[in-house]
Amino acid sequence: RHLFKLWTCGCGLLNYVEPVFRPPSEGRSLILQVTNGCSWNKCTFCDMYTQPQKKFKAKPEDETLAEIKKAAAAGPQFEKVFLADGDALVLPIRRLVEILTAIKKYMPWVKRVSSYCLPRNIRKKTVEDLKQLQELGFGMAYVGAESGDDEILEFINKGETYESTLSALVKLKEAGIKTSVMILNGMGGMKYSQQHAENSARLMNEAQPDFLSTLVVSYPMGDERVREGFKGEYELPDQRTLFMEMRHLIETLELDNTVFRSDHASNYVTLKGTLGADKQKLLDQLDDAIAGRIALRQEWQRGL
Figure 1: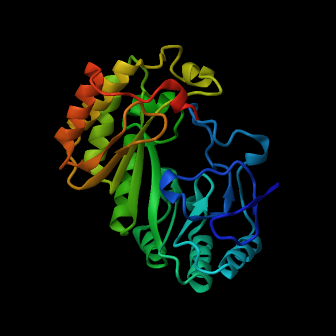
Figure 2: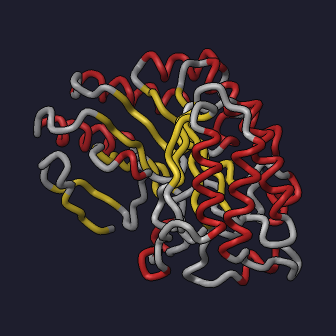
Figure 3: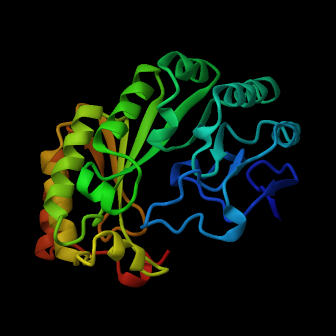
């Protein structure tokens, strides 16, 4: 394991198994690694937790409590806590309650706790379970839906379906936990681009998430696994197809009050707004991008 200094709280050394990932919006949060790796870790497009040291394991309870106390000793230098790694909500309710209770006890200034969440994490948790977490300060779940198309989800070995993702998002909403959903622009390749956009929009229309974001798929370590899943039919969309897919997605979305962001480094054009209020503005921006009327992010700027 690697020791990594957590600059956000000035609390000295916390014990991390690197690499550690977090959403961009958690940049000023205390990163508390309560699990290592991803409990599923079979998605063909994802290389986040493929290193040998990232084999999934829950951190021992005594180590987690010790790190909470160590971070607390630094005082109120952060207002949010992000529970890493890939899917902290896979932990049993008892463990999650213990963690959140300790955060509330030793860090009373913390305003929100959040984590990544696989829809499968929620299947055996009741709305009452989730409400208990929400009452203890758990306020946001980041859900990588990737696509709302069952065919594509099977191709990428996501281990989820349209219905399983929708069920999780609805259950979280009923518990009062905000949801931030990720859709991957280009995940359907050239062949499945339109159905990817349509069914992803349909899923979001039913779920009505609090936040929705997109990033463009990329394969810095190669796309062999993705091509194998698509039975050789996968071709990474060109720039125009990506824009057209995004336009079709936004055009099909019928959201009441969802904050939308497409500003990840992988995107050629930055899109920000609230849907549906800013729907036409976003469509106009995409039309300008398609017509070449605005400057786009260069390839070297998209390096991750």
